[in-house]
Amino acid sequence: GRTCVSRSEPRARDGHSEEEEEEEEAEEGCYQLYPGHIPTSPLQKALLAAGSAVMALYDPYRHDMVAVLGETTGCLALPNLRDKMKHHPEGYRILQERPRIRLSTLDMTRLRGLPDGTLGREYVRFLEDNKVSPDTRMPPKFVDDEELAYVIQRYREVHDMMHTLLGMPTNMLGEVVVKWFEAVQTGLPMCVLGAAFGPIHLSARKLQVLATELIPWAIRSGLNASCILNVYYEQRWEQSVESLREEIGIFPPP
Amino acid sequence: AAGLCPARALLARPGAALRALCGSVRGLAAGPEMHFGFQTVTEAERREKIYQVFESVAKKYDVMNDSMTLGIHRVWKDILVRKMNPSPGTLLLDVAGGTGDIAFRFINYVRSVRERQLQRKLRHHQNLSWQEIAESYQEDKSKSLGDSQVVVCDINKEMLKVGKQKAQHLGYTEGLSWVLGNAEELPFDDDKFDVYTIAFGIRNVTRIDLALQEAYRVLKPGGRFLCLEFSHVSNPLLSSLYDLYSFQVIPVLGEVIAGDWKSYQYLVESIRRFPPQEELKAMIEDAGFLKVDYQNLNSGIVAIHSGFKL
Image 1 (cartoon, chains in turn blue, purple):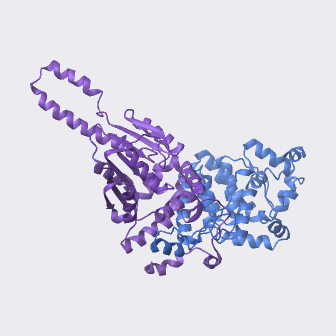
Image 2: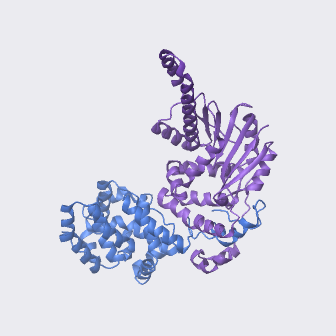
Image 3: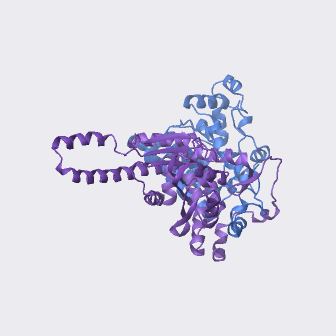
């Protein structure tokens, strides 16, 4: 843990800086709500939201900026999601047990051994085909509530499940489709912005496919489906992807 | 600060009540306690943390400087070198010189002074034969810097690496040396340098008194000590605005541009912790320097301290 600032610091420079300690910065180390938490003032959050939005558009490879944008703009959507989880038996269990999807907690050999078409097998196939790992998700920093921090963490870790259930790869096109689905499902402003501005980097041909087939499907599925955070994926590896889709309410991909 | 009250709600961090419950944590850490920004750490921890800060910011150091100061840091460094007014043949030691900003400016300055010298010499040589003039070009060509040299010394390998790459990229080949070293214990002999500079570095030194003593030691008699550093703003209105900008905007810039909030939080805290102008002047005098004085730039946001070894 971090050390707290001592008010009676013997080396404190002069009255000037001590005064400032009391007013603004002293809190820094004092109420870290979870490891990695950085408390921020509303002004800082506003600046972060604006800055990260610009940077994410400018350099789409800055995934950390997309993450920061999500955290700083999620103040309405995240409590909403948390409540949805609380009022659903499976979601409630997830909030209590706080499962994490990480390489260290997944039994990759067992999942790989499952029959084709099951969630576990297809998830591992997705990870290997796209050469991604669940461990690259950024931990939250700017969410000022410990439970909401877990909610956004869960959302990030479940993102790969979304790819698997929607059958979308991790290229720009696939990501945009998943973002549209997530935007409808979660209402997170970051998803909405990503969905709206993501296509900027796409070619005209892809845009056409996107607009005519993929986006309408993603929106319909998103609206029809129950809350994707209310599914305890870790307990459903053996379930087939099709049956899970039906259960949640996702229409088959075009 | 009273004037900030209406804006306080916008600036206050959540959970202010917890602050009252927080005491300081004096752990089992050995060694004297020091500050790292607004944290309390041991001397060894402080050195380690500062090393890590600069290791992580090295690649984005210049970009961040430009963003945070809106490019004004370049003017400050120009003023430092102009104040130094080095003549060709000067031997400069730039401590904590990392990415080479002062070193490059020094070389440019000396080169232009040298060019002017050569032009003046040419005008006096107009009575020489054309053959003698051509010969004088040959010997002067190899002395475009006129034997001036700058040694860039930094404790951090990453910063030196960035500096060397920059030098290569910008075409600085001669008159430059890069040395890994600690300002508190310089790897140089006594009475070696004409000028010692430390720009935005002394704030990060753990024992400032030792660094000043070392500066005194390695300077030749007659040598000059120059320190460019963030200092204290006495004007209350400007000070409030400066604080607002420092604490609200700079860490955000750090996160957005460099992906590193914590290092830039450390930066603004370390500025507040650093001794103000008069106190630094006294410390420099304690190290043995004479004719110590300081010049405020931008109402004290930055100050240049100067002293002589006489």
